[in-house]
Amino acid sequence: MKIALINENSQAAKNALIEKTLRKVVEPMGHEVVNYGMYAADDAAQLTYVQNGILACILLESGAADYVITGCGTGEGAMLACNSFPGVLCGHIESPLDAYLFSQVNDGNCVAIPFAENFGWGGELNLEYIFEKLFCAPGGGGYPPERVVPEQRNKKILDGVKKVTHRSLVDILPELDRDLAKGAVSGEHFQEYFFKDCKDAAIAEAVKALLA
Image (cartoon, rainbow, N blue to C red; front, side):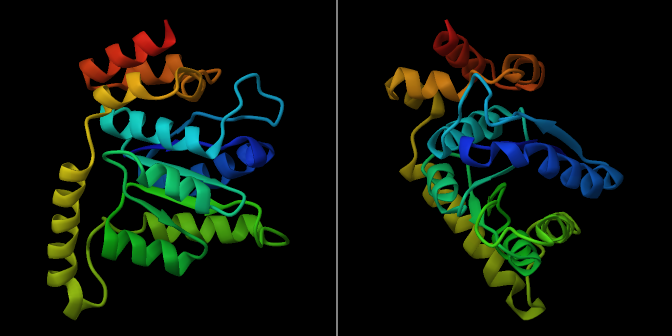
């Protein structure tokens, strides 16, 4: 699994810590981490949590990433922004229990973590345990056992609803505020990572038009 990390401007200073913790947990599991930044608070490309949502959608819908780890100060804004876009099912995760239940019950592909709220002594340990429980088993396994069948059925229903209620990303990108959308894909290493891993030619062309 290719896991993308995205940080917005208010929590960019924690990027290195988050990346280190994520790699520590998931690389021994055989997963790959791709860090899309922000890498530091003074990066030239400043991401807002709304742009996190745009970028998460581009990565997931194009196949450039299989999972997105993101967040903001409270995690709420990033979660709302991510869920505004097609192909993104984002959970708000504060604890290892949240992580496990979101993975097993909701089988999403993105999490938004509060990187400021209650992030004090031991914050990196909570992150480590969150990542462990998020990826300790294939998603969608269900919990508890007697609820597995209805939970899996409801996930399929939700996926069907999202296909109806969301338009294609290729149609959405040109209609977004150009500076907002272009800013989401202007990170230092975005083009290096994205175009190498993108599996959707139409989305690649839409992103190229945005960057032009």
